Image 1: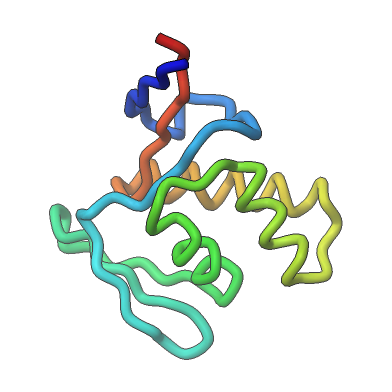
Image 2 (image 1 turned 90 degrees about the horizontal axis):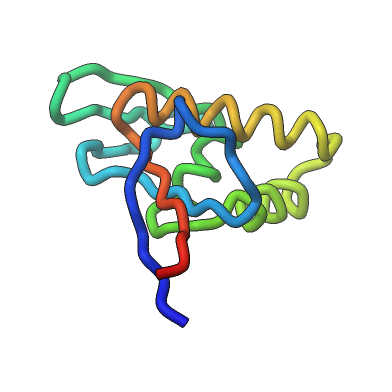
Length: 109
């Protein structure tokens, strides 16, 4: 079985459990309080993430499935699963909108 990875913007895609997400290489991050400050190297715009967002940012330094991200957040934080999924989707789509994350949709070849 061969797998093909193709990049798509997250903002225009409904996220599925098996979709993979990764941070782009267009950002640098540093700890800032309880979270992270991100600098988009292409736009020179800074963004900030709270502690949960910082945790997710660390997870997506390598391609991770939506299901794995959700599982890791649920294991670490006391949060309702539906709220968790909605917040993860919103964060990942926001990162994608700002050029900081990409979706790798798996497709059989």
